[in-house]
Length: 117
Image (cartoon, rainbow, N blue to C red):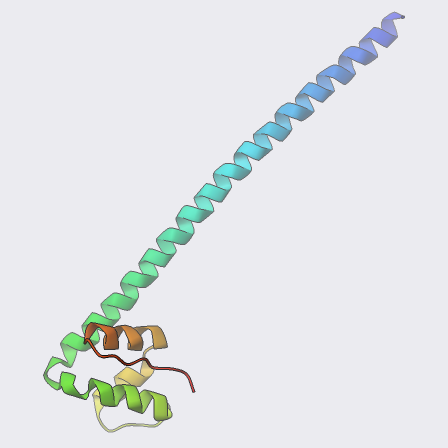
């Protein structure tokens, strides 16, 4: 073998080692990014759950004196949520998302679920 053959083999070996190292680093980085994304998703889900809870508790607190009317709010929301109800409690309940509406019903201990229809 000539000197140029040895140089070619050494360069090819170094290129192979560098390619393997880069592949390993990319795998490691993708694992870190997946963990980061998972943490972000969990944090977003926690924030969303806290917001839903906060809105439900706020509604219940605001209308505590009329809490007996909450089942009627659910019926109004299922009947026609676009109708302009004269009672502010109904209007406010109809403007909430289904998730918040159902959380209000759950916190009030009612065995009801608002469903889209």
